Length: 145
Image 1 (spheres, one colour):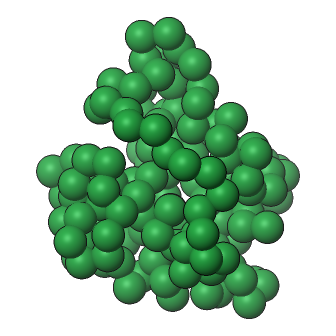
Image 2 (cartoon, rainbow, N blue to C red; image 1 turned 180 degrees about the vertical axis):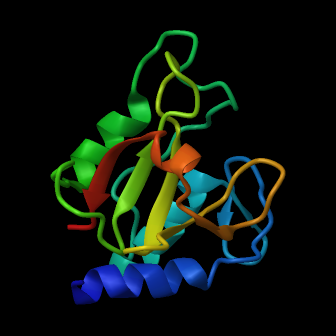
């Protein structure tokens, strides 16, 4: 694991317990999954790479645009999908078949009991097991540059 990946996991774990707040990105006060990634990015690099426009809970679904995937490709490095999962990788999830990919997490532990850190509606930032149902939803993995 690179130093940057290790730092990303430590930073993300520092957000655990932050309440879920749609469109927010403030450690301890509120965040959504994108806000968590934005917060980790800010602690790693300083300023965010681009402004994030306002978005609704169903963003990108009406037109089917993969906006989150496109943004990830602009700012993160794609990982080989055949390579083993590594801590610190950003995970992109498709929550339902046929829908756009719009959930993010950061791999924390790998190996026999993988985990990832994420925020999702109705929960705070948590470190969850990357169980089979979650793993099936991963459509892409990225590394911080």
